[in-house]
Image (tube, rainbow, N blue to C red; front, side):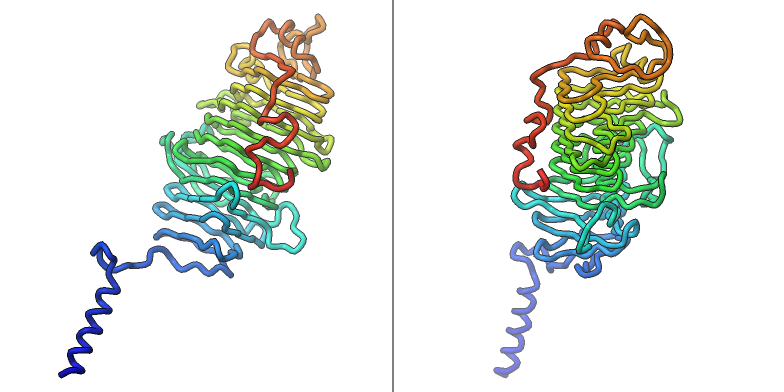
Amino acid sequence: MKKVFLSMLAIAGLFVASCSSDDDGPVIPTGPTIDPANFTGNFTTGAITLDASETYNLTGPVVINDGVTLTIPAGTRIEASGGTSAYIAIAQGGQIFVNGTASNPVIMTSRAASPSPGDWGGLVLCGRAPINKAATATAEVSDLTYGGTIANDNSGSIRYLRVEYSGAVFNGQKEFNGVSFFGVGSGTTVEFIQSVNADDDGFEFFGGTVNASNLVVINPTDDAFDWTEGWVGTGTNWYALMDNGRGHRGIEADNLEDNNTATPYSDPTISNVSIVGNGDGTEDDGFKIRRGTKGDFTNIYIEGRDEGIEIDDAQTEANLLDGSLTFSNVRFATTAKAFDIYDADFDNGDGTTGSGIDYITIADAQAAYAMATITESATATGAGAGADAPSWTAGWTTGL
């Protein structure tokens, strides 16, 4: 009898241990099991949370589908190998939560002993916010659908993340970036992210409404920041250092290549930007503004570029004249050619008219085009400290 009683007590103890302290029922693990040595998968259910004490070997695609969340705690390190086959993609309805801190960022990098640009794909987010390419489209990398009608769509939150040696290339028309935003909505938090040594662009926005602040780019092989397809978010505190003789533009800004008047127009509000350093001598612009984009640019610092701001295409020039494209408090430091307008219909600034590229000063532009949409400032600080790394980059970035 005593043995039976003790056995009953043991069973009761096991039952109590299996319940939560607030009587919510048994504790049931959520999300699939992740193997840090082989981090890959097409996840369709569950909540995935990585472990900061592990180093994750990204060996193939990680796709976070509708209804699935991926949470990455501070200090987590993900090392990728496999070129275009290794990337992290957030599909429409999926969410990512990168919870880095200034002292303990999340790092996504190459697994190679001697890393180089393009060792792996990068981070891709696909949302349901509007684009002007079509009602919806297929992302050039990941083959996921993006675009829609939900301006405040929420793909999660990314804070204090470093992405290194990404941007693997399929071909000249299909390539990853450091981080790619496809139709991402304004409900998504994007701040304190660095792209380091990306093959192609540091950050690229394909439409959408997402706001992005405190972005840092170091030595991409193409552009630091790029947008197209009707992006209408805000960009605040952007710093690009391109000092190793490679890369092209600090900012390359388009509306839509195939239709410069497609709506919604690309029309972001950009403030506090520093573009610093030399490129490879090809398309070495601070800003390349073209293909009908609109936008308001304030507190801009450009140093070391062959050309400061270049305006291309008739629709972009029309936006400059009607005030839907503006530049205020711009400082050109050691920039050979301050302002460059591709003349389709305008006075060249020297009393003649005609097409061609004319390099002129801000004052000449104002006089020639009778516009108040461009102003210069000798005290513009850009991202915060002119050519120097701003204080908000301390602790979580590298290479500055």
